[in-house]
Amino acid sequence: MGNDNTTEQRILEAAEDVFHEKGYDGARMQEIAEQAGINKGLLHYYFKTKDKLFEAIFSAALNRMISRILSILELEIPLDQKIDLIVDQYMGMLMKNPALPRFVLNELNKNPDQFIEKHFKKDVKEAFANFSESVQKEAEKGVIKQIDGRMLFMNMISMIIFPFVGRPLIQVVLGADNAEFKQIMQERKEHIKKFIKDAIRV
Image 1 (cartoon, rainbow, N blue to C red):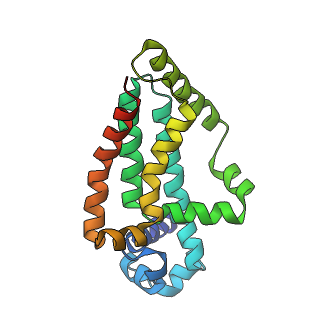
Image 2: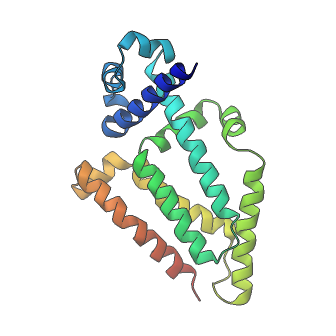
């Protein structure tokens, strides 16, 4: 059993590397098998199709990201620190898994109820309520402007996600290859944090 787990883990790690480098369309099962050090037949024994393997990789990545964001939303720390952590964690995860937004959108379009039930538990609402409450408290203290916590969160997440969803267009417009896109996203982390905090400060 342990050996099975080791083989499956090697497959998942190899697939994550190949999907990250080549994207879903460019990834080949043969290449993933070679990187995992197994034959293609064994790969198909564990994951019958590329879709199933892709789903396993990004479902795990999404759950990791959700759990990290939830833990940050619930922290009792100043709002500006919370913003920094959310942007760093979210951007970091998407830079490692640039196909994640595409996976989420595809799964949402296929079966929204099932997707939400699988990945978003009840504690999501509680964590977000905690975030909204911290926004309200800082507004009451006069540290930030009066702002709806829902709008702040949506603005922040939209700024993070859009470049990855629209990556091909963004790269054409900016004239950036893959390496340059990664560098721009690295710089964007600091830009988003400053932009958001400047927008809400009194």
